[in-house]
Length: 80
Image (spheres, helix red, strand yellow):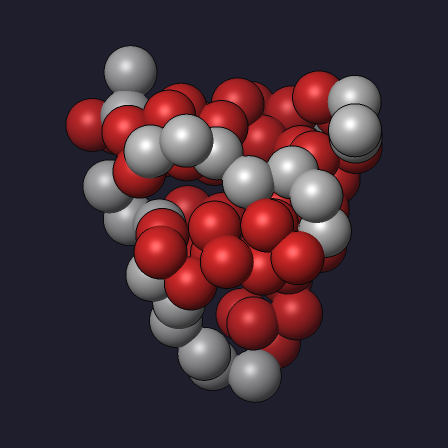
């Protein structure tokens, strides 16, 4: 089982990869990728909270990844 910060890093890494190729993905697609890595969320609501946490995690670490998360998931304000 991955630690929470490892999941946040993975979500950020995926966001920047897709962002760099102008690819948008859905929460369902992201959760399938996370499932393949052993860290899927139980619901899209829970996943949105995880993406929001990743967004906050990257805010002061890497502004590009932080921006890529905002681009990929433009409803982050609704995830609280």
